[in-house]
Length: 319
Ligand SMILES: Cc1ncc(COP(=O)(O)O)c(C=O)c1O
Image (cartoon, rainbow, N blue to C red; front, side):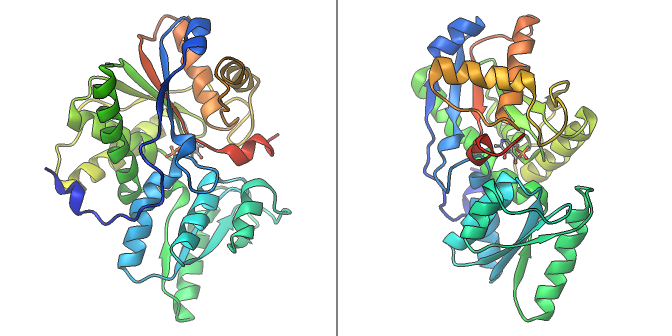
């Protein structure tokens, strides 16, 4: 076995998450679709980020840290779940948001309820969070705290271990069901989720292509990030680096990152009406729109697995 089992990990998620057929959605779309329900990971309101946090927070614990420092947008699913995960292990958290202060709602409201301290950079540039994380980490260190900084989205090799192990979980479920999907579809933002799945699928020779629909970054930037993170995570646990290029689909960001799109809303409405499953408007709805559009172009071979990645709080807040 690889070095995977020796990686420090804390338990935050309720696993395995269900893998369920979506017969009415499949009939409506004209392709067999299965839903991997990572909206049901079980910390807070669930979501994909819980898996990576199991490895990131274990590392923080191992380093004796007492405070998590991370950030994102004011509506960040990642930041909220990071604050909840930290709280779960008795750690404090400081969350940095880009832009000017806004009244807490949705994810920030939940994070604040869990005791997170929220700060704003005053700069609308998303990258302003990165420098602020470094500054606050230094500030806390000078005060005698033991901060654990993590970049936006938790997209590091450690965080990507979450979806490398999710790939193993999925492989077991597919074996049991004697199901051999041709493709695994998901929403891609900071790229850690796709990197873990990509490296895991190559390692396991899973036979399906991992297709990410970008909801924020340009396709080339995603391909480079996934490639780098995937190779780092493979190296970390001593498995062969993937050789096939990562597959990222563009064209579905809509009016912008963090904003709903009419195409995504229509895709989410179809899934809710046919299967009674909610897709968040910022990530999974746009990925489903990408899958349905590719299917209409004849580019999808079934069966496919679609990752329902969480983000429930944004069902109520995004414009
Ligand atoms: C609900 C949801 N789905 C998908 C993603 C994309 O994951 P990643 O940032 O690892 O690409 C995110 C990221 O925040 C998310 O919150």
